[in-house]
Amino acid sequence: MAIERVTLTGWGRTAPSAATVIERSTRDVGALVDVIKSFPARGGIARGLGRSYGDPAQNGGGAVVVLRDHAHEAVIDHAAGTATVPAGVNLDELLRVLVPRGWFVPVTPGTRFVTIGGAIASDIHGKNHHLDGSFGSNVERLSLLLADGTVRELSPTSDPALFWATVGGMGLTGIILDATIRLLPITTSRLSVDTERVGDLDTLLATMESGDRYFRYSVAWIDPMARGKHLGRSVLTRADHATVDELPPKHAVDPLAYHPRQRITVPPLVPGPGVINHTTIKVFNELWYRKAPRRRVGHIESIPGFFHPLDMVGAWNRLYGRAGFLQYQLLVPFGAEDALREVLERFAASGAPSFLSVLKRFGAGNPAPLSFPAPGWTLTVDVPTATPGLRELFHLLDDLVLDAGGRHYLAKDAHTTPEAIRRGYPRLDEWRAVRESVDPTGVWVSDLARRLQLC
Image (cartoon, rainbow, N blue to C red; front, side, top):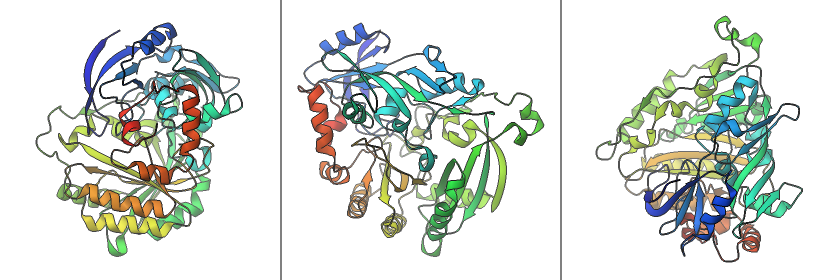
């Protein structure tokens, strides 16, 4: 397949770097071993669809191996409720296979354009973490191609240290070849969704704390520009997979029909700073809050409409203009709600524009040293990189989060420091020791790994 020199960025379109890009399938292990042997001095890293927001799938001056596989190669075990999937298959393709057969993936993030390998390497989470955990928590086994060209079979009980170092390990332990994941049985391709407007942060936290356990999925869109008594005003949506009896007649005819579509695509050249700015976002946030129902119960929505609304807009990251944007995702533990409040107060006072801001409630974490989710609250905001004073604001917020015992998500990060990661991930040295045991010469490396001194 193709080998060429390419300039790459993450989804935030910041910090571009050029690397030798090689496309391969995980099914051709021999070809992958040859690729590893040909890596330049600056090593290599695997890449899926490039949907991490920062630089974990970049390797300036080195090699980047883009993995491409096909969903028809996935093997579904209907009796066990699992699927064994090549790591280069993305969730979009996989869902087109699974949903009509009555299955759903255990965890999906806000986009279905993420590969199985990327989902494990980033240990992605979704709207159901409070009940079902992260993606890595639902992996039964995986095959890992190591730096020396050997393949290791891993599971939570077979070589668990390397398994959990790979989950959330940002591709720095090797190339994931395939994985067996647990599936969720469904009887329809729709969800029954409850929606309500919530006027302030205290009410929102109390409502989620008391009621999330009754829903598989829960997420709050939050207005990060609201201040004073309206601080934290939100639109809370919670859902479960709908049963056939809950469907209207037009959907009950073919209850597992699944046809995700992309409605529009943002053109390649959004002039100047883009269309995301303080004025447009303030208006958008006001309209978004006002248009939401005060309370609506049992509204039927499609899988794409509930889980992946932004996927309906192709290349939506171009809306932020040439300079791109930063996605800032933090976690603060339960009991540190005052820190969350101060983060929102500081953000609102700064005037930084953000229309994609969500709050979720995490459940128990898993044993992976670099896994992001842990019991607590996670807040995500998107902000144009060109926003004045943005770096200073985020570093201020970093201190608030870390002092509260929180952390930042490596798959979203494009600005934090090595010290912030050391504080947020106290088991970092444990992860380093496992990684070095299987890659003592540092074959696997990325721009993120260098920037944050992970290895």
